[in-house]
Length: 392
Image 1 (cartoon, rainbow, N blue to C red):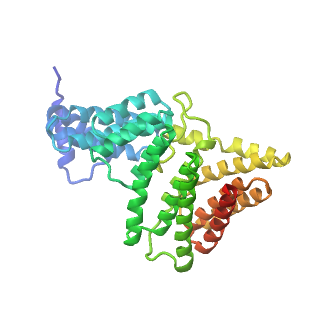
Image 2 (cartoon, rainbow, N blue to C red; image 1 turned 45 degrees about the vertical axis):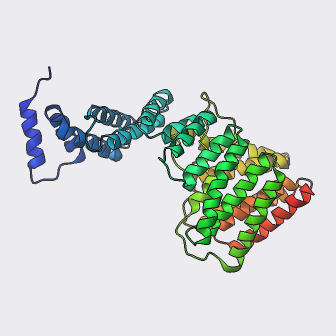
Image 3 (cartoon, one colour; image 1 turned 90 degrees about the vertical axis):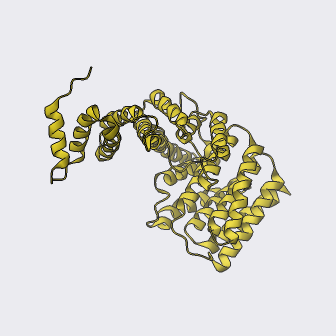
């Protein structure tokens, strides 16, 4: 039997009814007390107050404690209570993120599983992808799509296709990505999305088909992309669009997955194919590889081992994109030297047209993001010529 501290209840009520504005910490204290005596009225308020207080925190251990308490409070809400499911998902999502930030992956995965049971499967799909369990992640993506939970947006479809491709299901991945491409083509024709996004998708699809051994499909996608780029170079975008760098960054980073160590439960890697939602520990670990890669690049320069240097340089560029590739301020000035160097290094390999075509394609797609369409078209036209000559 719960013993009620009536003085504490009175103080809490006075605080809430007073003319002053309580701090978030004071609100949490008041709602903790009142939720014991009136759980139906104050339990939901406690959840909201705990999550709001967590946003003020800069201490990961405090974050996880507040999110855990919010989750317990949300679970205690009556099954039919208004917005119970929404509050429970918010609390659990905050809890799993806080656990992963501390590297407590097993506990975080368990909360993600609870989240999926509550109707939000995206975090669990991300964790499974981080651990290399791509087929299971793709099954969650398919189930969510079948149930109509996510719309067929760029973010959902790219993640699903990436998980299918990671599982080795290349034809299924292509089918999902084709659906995205068809929608993007329609939207671009109706001027409801940018031609830049269509270009990035076509180029990524060409990479997918090349990986699957479908040279003809890859070449067709490249030719279509070149046509869109020619239109951009001649007339620019028909409409003005706000920042779309996240689209470029997501596909550029995904294109580098094969060059990274394989993901496993013991050694997780980022869930390539998603722009957001990476577990904090995994993101920190991925960016934490930078000093080692830069040291390796220096050694490769000294020994003039150009093929390996080109590859390592690209891995460094991808991490730079992860870190700040969606920030528009001085975007071209910050990133242009990196992509220029990639092309310069690759041009020193006359017997390796594939690496040069890749570097030119990377710079072209970056230039599209920077809205420098004529140079982007020139780079991609050269890349297409190199690849078509190689096929011939």
